[in-house]
Image (cartoon, rainbow, N blue to C red; front, side, top):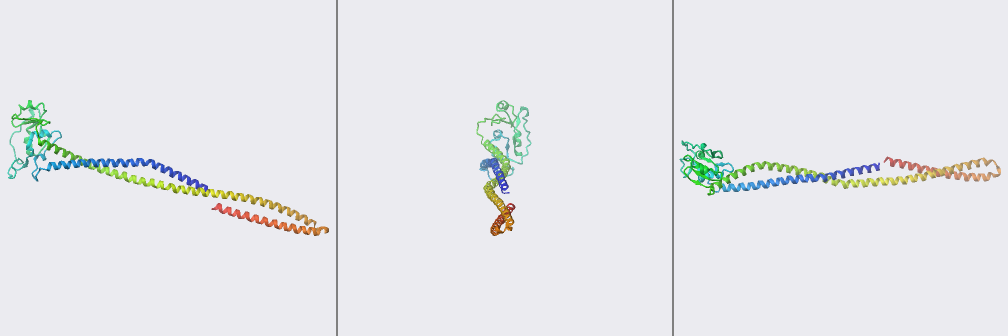
Length: 348
């Protein structure tokens, strides 16, 4: 039983070592997953921080010279990316004017929100140009102005300018302007409104990118928390597996020592039993010899001349028989005691 317990302890220790080694191998995967999730989260946080900082800077620039309630119409105009220079060339400084009612007394220059034009819009379709309105969204007050402006290739402007109807204009994506009355403004001419339009477009792009990035960051943070929790649980399992090994090793040493001690004691008892068996055999032989001598002496009692000698021999034989009988009894008692002890050990 002790040897079986030692074998079981050895098997348990081997299984625990195998489990600990397997966990050590899996730990690399868990740690890398947590590190990757942390890196992804940190990169998204850094990216969101840069975009937010840039957006705040642009917001401050765009609102720096804007009085409360007096925003320029430029802030309400949105041009598709790449058409900011065309819009700036088309409207110029007029983009810095605000929207107001014609009866307002506090506005000296503005776009009339209540202006109902009866003018006939210029027809630019005959020139084969695209109206700027397809690339720009603006308040209704600018619709008439924008409808008279067409977008052309930079190389075609000079040729088409002579065919413009009264009030019409042509612009290029590079920022050139051709007006119906012969005015030409090349793209290299300064256009302060173009910078503000580009800033406004960039600001809108940043806001859209920030809005799209926030859910992605939240998902990354959730994934990081999940990975961190998984790593924490894994580290607890690995710690428990490592802590268990010394305890199992001590248990194995104890049970192995118990089995070895019982084996040593068993060898001692078996040696003692062999010695006792030999003693019993010798005593039984002596007892047999004593009985034979006793019987011979009993048969010789009928001879008078040897009666005294026989009586003495009989007394001596009886004494010897008693002595041998006592030795046999003692040996049997020791053997019985040893048998009981052995049975008790086997029971334990």
